[in-house]
Image (cartoon, rainbow, N blue to C red; front, top):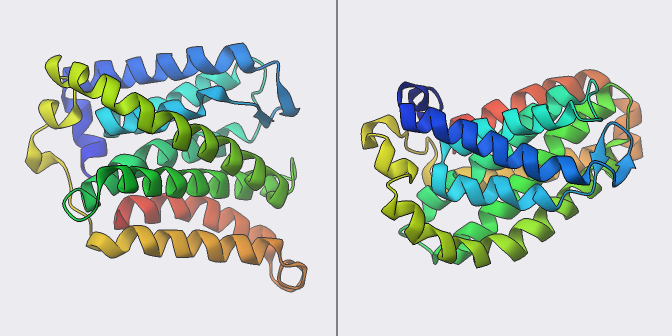
Length: 240
């Protein structure tokens, strides 16, 4: 997690944060007309970008995706849900590169990338859907499904195709986050290889609770939603 702070001490990383934000915003705006839930969700072909940028730029992609999504919301979809959009897109671009680092020596890279993309999509969908349901703008199951399917399909299909094409070019320009930051500035995983599976199990448990009527009726669900929407990103940062 310390690289999320350390990256701001490198001029090139700040430039990369700005670049990631600009790319994401530019890719989001043209599709603002394809609205599914007004002020909340539109069809997003740009959803593959945070995962792709995460592979190359690490912490810069996380900040860039969060800022880029927020700026994009000012073009027709600003709402109370924008706050959770910031958190959700932050972890969406944070998770893939952390998963790749954790499993880089223990499994084929494409499998780690696939797992990271699915976990990132599920986490992003959970955080945003919890927050938006809390402010009663859209029901959790509907929004979770829309975000998860949109993000997963695009990232799983496009990112494995684009990474081999772009990676050598990025490295030749010395813009890969490992070429910009000192290794000591990049944190290790607190729970090592079990961190991502634990996070996935947690997301699945939250989903099960939120779609089970008997549980949502018997629990103080609004307080739980608010707490989880704020705590889940921090848990991801701590254990990955």
